[in-house]
Length: 293
Image 1: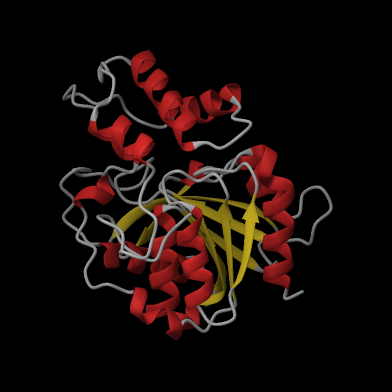
Image 2: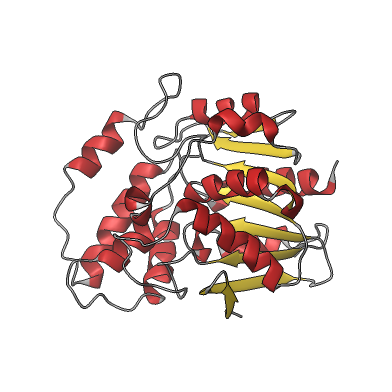
């Protein structure tokens, strides 16, 4: 059941799975639906795994959390990190296992660096060690095909949900790896759209923020943190798709190399996504990591 929680001066919409008294796992993405419900249930122990208490939530300007102006945020990346720490505080959790996907991986890295007492273990999925913008010279950039698509996208009628949904499914296809499941992607897109009030301005700002993480392009990310990765003390697991066109695999390898004692798990056929076909790799890897085995 979704709940609005006051944290760091804003309302964050969160949902929990599993046993409240079990070890907590905070999942950070763009919206809470970055993490599919079935995946959350598996991580909470449904189906025979160890019991867990899983929390997913909407970042500011997504889902049902506080929304102001998604493409002109009056807050910084560090504010989103403070939100995550405050959410744990509001839930009465002194610390949690933390997993970040994509842009959520930036928040998770900084949470481990700036609030180390809050992070029992760290899992980084499909992310990189640098903020939005050009990658460092030693890191692979976004695939040219992805950049060509987003710099010259097909027309979208931002006042028409069907047009937005079709564009979002096509984006998911391009982000996905081998074995892309269109029906799964469409269901995920429709679930996100169901939680958004239709934009009144006709510009699709809320749609883009929720479906494309567009807020991060306008966000003040502050100081670099890659050079600080060696300070991370939380046991770290890096999971990366071998077919990721947005943050290619070299980004995950860099994280695993620069965070002390980090372990890298690569997933064949996975792109910038958390598809059901990869859960048999992702779930056991996270559960082994959080249980210390």
